[in-house]
Image (tube, rainbow, N blue to C red; front, top):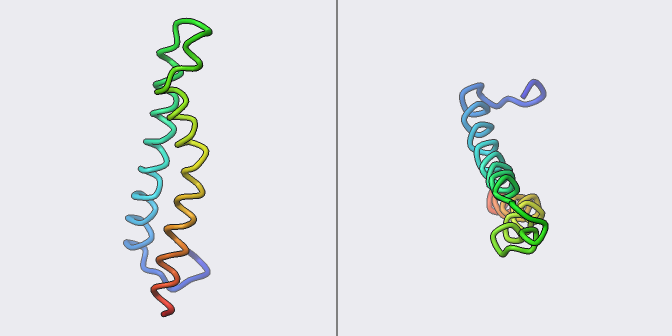
Length: 74
């Protein structure tokens, strides 16, 4: 923020929205882990889906940001 001419209000709400999505992904994965009651539960579809989402979230976010940047300069 200090190196750009972005307004403080814009910086704040964009940061909060970005962190909210990331927090939701981490909370979902943690919730699924907390519900494990046996070692066999590691292969449950919900837990696998949570870990897939956790792993692909940064890639999806990067694609979205690149798409937004591309539209700004086009």
